[in-house]
Image (cartoon, rainbow, N blue to C red; front, side):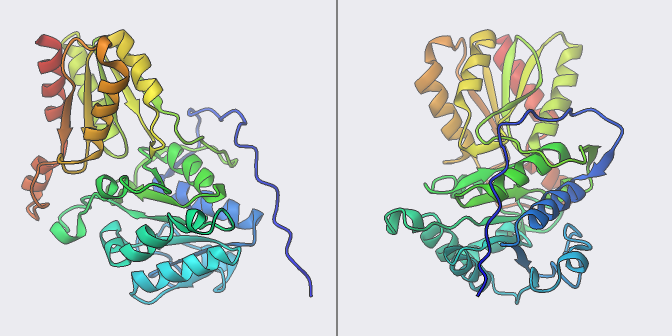
Length: 346
């Protein structure tokens, strides 16, 4: 009986390719490229979830992948998140490398026992004998008039759990590089996408590349205020920065990219220059990610602050269905710009 020899782990320390170039693809295509490349490299990897195979993915992220990899590696599952998440736990413990797609992270709550009670604790409970190198990925947050039960931003809830890594890309370039790193990581990774960003286009290199976890990216330089965010709101922060520049206010826009691990060092470095900070978080304010970021800022950089940290969150109510109410409920460029002006002008 033959045994499969796993390929060597790729070099994650290699220099990253340029963010500029003529090749422009969608966010969903960047995700597909990252998965397909790793599946060609390592036969232990498979993708499973609702409608990922014959329907080409509910959001067409996995379009064409079943044609290449077959139905044993691109697997349509029943509508049973607890069931197929549990299947992934067993598969990972047996040596496979599952990628599990939740049609929405709102539905991951059905699988909470598997993904929060089993996956993060397996390595610890087994005394280091085996872990659960699984990537759970799917749409996080308000997807556009989907109502309260389909619009969860789960990062504030799941970031509380030790043993998992939380990755939230803000653009197609980061989506590909961060997903590639997630797939080869030895720990379980929660990869949070946004349905509203799947059609976003940007330059994405053809070659596979790996963006390290825990390293923030500075999208814009400024000396008046540090603006910290992650995921889709990073784009709102950049829009706000353009408006603020017209008033002569320059902001450092930091994209965390991962919130577990969190790159607090880059935030502190920026604060030593700006002395003011606004944290933008698309989850609810009470016990949210912004609260943790601000706590760490106080612990690590209190003496550098000239104004108390300010946060801009989703409003502390269930997500509304109404389109204008949903837009007002979420962080937006106007609310971010207003917060920065308040901090700078105080």
